[in-house]
Length: 250
Ligand SMILES: Nc1nonc1C(=O)NCc1ccc(Cl)cc1
Image (cartoon, rainbow, N blue to C red; front, side, top):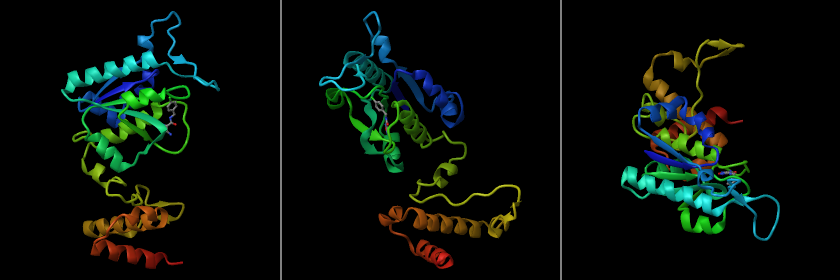
């Protein structure tokens, strides 16, 4: 997967590329990550990359010409590297809320150019003319688009074949099948008098699989009933959820 990043702080992305799943994916060339910094296109003595907002008000906006030059360069490179026209993504609280389905769509959308903004925003005409999709990672205000960009890249990278060690860990991840994750346990067997559920020590893999599905269904019902709304459960899942509800009926 080819991802271009437009950012004034490309070094922030070291957090993504220097270790972990995405780091290994970049090393194994499952993901190509390239950066364009608008500051490299600044022509004035101060190398300015911000500009004042029409209509006044506090704060600055990203300077249009340096931002657009960086986006164009990234777009050009994407086509040269992949032969495909990239999808240009802009992260902001005004965007479409990112969820696992959105991540799956972006991970299979061909090359991406991700625009990480700074200051108070970018000119609306740049959004209209150069941005294909605007996405939000949540309803809160951050200081820039770099962290949201890293969230998106990390989530998408996990879905690229061969990126995760054992592929099934991606499958069993919560939200992969639209349910919350089941509880997890590891050594020691007892923590402050709390024991590991017997079934997990039984070696009965069918029972363990069943227990985990029941827990996922039950926790989703308890904590995020909205996730169950758009979903039809098969007979087995209905049975497990009903068992869970009976066991947890107050
Ligand atoms: N929440 C979010 N989901 O995606 N992005 C955000 C966010 O707060 N971005 C901050 C931001 C975005 C653009 C610019 Cl120019 C400046 C700051």
